[in-house]
Amino acid sequence: MADPIRVGIVGATVTTGGSGWGANAHIPALHALPDYELVAVCTAHEDTAQASAERFGAPLAFHDMDAMVAHPDIDLVVVSVRVPLHHELVMAALRAGKDVFCEWPLGATLAEAEEMANLAREQSLRTSVGLQGRSDPSIRYARDLVAQGYVGEVLTANLSVMSQAVLERGPGRIWQAVRANGANPLTIAGGHAIDALCAILGEITEVSARVTTRITTWRDEETGRDVPVDAPDSIAVAGRFESGAEAAIQVASVPAHATGTRLEIFGREGALFLTAPSANIGPNQLLGARAGDPLDELQPPDEYFLAPEGTPSGPPRNVAHAYARMADALGAAEEFAPGFDLAVTRHRLLDAIERSSETGTAVTMPG
Image 1 (cartoon, rainbow, N blue to C red):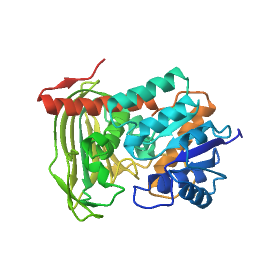
Image 2 (cartoon, rainbow, N blue to C red):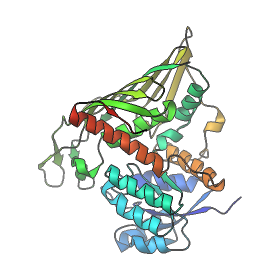
Image 3 (cartoon, rainbow, N blue to C red):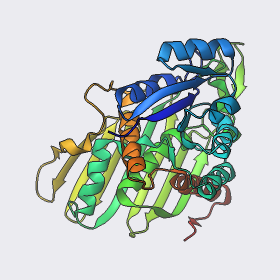
Image 4 (cartoon, helix red, strand yellow):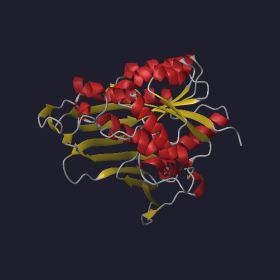
């Protein structure tokens, strides 16, 4: 076995108030995988850095990102912080010559994502972005079934993403009210599910969209005051794939009875359905049938399950699948997908959706 990949993570902390994704998803995933060794934790303050390193079993604690990325015992830097901070931290890691795994969205804007991807390419560094839905076993199996002709020629796909609105937020989440911060239902729940759709059926080349904000205030739990919201929470898209197949996509954040994610793929010879509370967290249930046959659950074969059996369910599971795929790619000196270049492709699609809504016209993706 090759030496484990030595990881330093920024954003996994014992403090409360944020999403906790670094601590709740990345740390358990890394601990479950023998290909990785958690070496360092970096947070904003010395006391929380030390406490977090002790809690998570990391020998090194940093409260200075520049010091962590300069350390010679770190091979891979994981960035799991608020989206507006991604650009600064990722650029620091890349300039230090480190491979990087950054959570999704890669940047708060398309321009930020492009700059990070360009630097990684110039430095010949390996990257990964947290679009872990495409590592979900059922999503990978659905992709292969489509490629093998299970449904025949794909005609149309319907994607519905109904996530639970959080109308009262503390200081760790209230910042998401601001559209410019880049973390909202379009980019997060929508971005993850749309990426899974594209992982299965290929890229979308044209979109006509309507993007609106239906819930215009949130309650700040700390102050008790209403906070204005301009982050989009209702998105409708008509799209066309490279293959010519059509797509209907609806993404919304709703106050009650959210139904999660449902993807329907219809071909000339069959159909596939994927459902989950969240496409990226999973687990996704896959149903399918050839024309004339009853729908039945399609269980992915064992080779699609890459995380060890002891990996906790919930948020860590698909993150572990993604890390396992990344380790395989790094070991084979191959480019990993989803890396930063694919993240830019996804940012461009989301940007096209917003531009279509703003202009009231269809937007064609650059060739």
